[in-house]
Length: 556
Image (cartoon, rainbow, N blue to C red; front, top):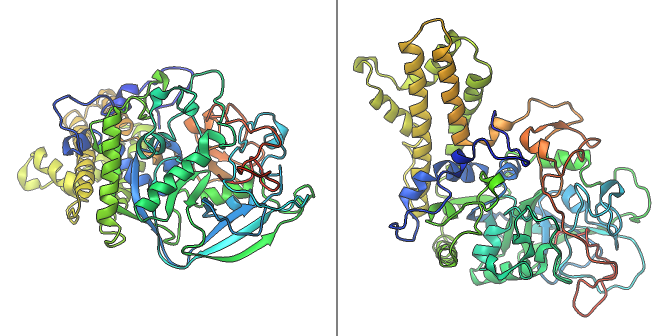
């Protein structure tokens, strides 16, 4: 994709991506709106297309949407900590073994080593430094360095609220906005003492976490989210960072502990030991780029509630990142209204079929049809003849030669082609369909514009070709599909790498490329400031010393 995000300078395409994210017109009554869904069509399209996918959710990391999600009976989930005992308070579960293995460590021996050291011994967490903390510590005074890898199996269907984007990323870039400003009702105007991570990313000093509250207030956040989930009759929250995770509110309800095996001494060398940002972790992440796999989580797209549906201001206060939506400029009343709508949708949908319409399948068909061909038109087509062939292939199916050059009817056929069989059931279904229809209409209009350019002026000069390439480039910028950044096939010892909190570089965001563990941390960290770890000896559990938890050694 030709557009680049340059964190050191203005965005070339800021006006394209900022469209629809600013302050809506004042005469629109508050509530979900089909008009707003059409204006923010590409953002809604991408939210559906990227749901529970590591790749798209990493590049579009400031999530603005919520979905009901179900983990079926019999699914295996994983947890790493310093005790063989199941947590009795909210804690995390990982979908992948290697994600949990990173945290199966004794005291001070989570990913990256001892306190204040990042991978490779870099101070302050470094690129890829891990800083999440446990919510509960084991009441065990043994002075050992052993961790435990837990495996749990669901004993019934588990219902969660899925927070899209990089909701597990503890950053000041907006990854926490939907949780903190909508679900938790925090106010960014309360000042940095109340919510330091809501400060502008440009601030020079990194935010300091509240005492014993975990980085970016993770303990309090999990407590608040679990209180909300219980009130809605749900089991917890699903989020994503470098891997998908669940904030499980009650380990005694719906989970069976299959095993809790002691890991080797954290200070001893061990063949095959997991390392943060190592090749094996990256392999596991790459396996989930296009989905969580094996129907381990079922998203109810008909329950989708998105800030993109509502007349709220999503403008990013950072002028360099107008491509990323933020909620920090939105009115508190509007955010409270969105939260109420989430509760209403949960109440209406949690006893319905797990999925009524698979809107992601619809987006997959559209992206699969057009993405690579649009990129080819902008990067690989260098003659007018090739452009004629390519645009003809994409548009001929919609042209009835009996109608002559009636492009309006052809564009209409093209627009609704992948939407004909879908009948909305819920209000979110209607809004999603409007957004997808607006997106396909834009695609079809541009393709038929290119068709007319190359058909009406087949002269050998470059004017129609250049105009066609420019039109396709503009369409790609409008769509902002993450597939445009997909790498070519990688070597067997490499993966296509994008920034996934807490590791990744600015260059890897602009130009994802095949990488291995030896170069994963090179360059400027994309996520900016990493949250600091508390001093050694800080208690993470009120009233007791935490012998087995590492500030880096557990998800929460």
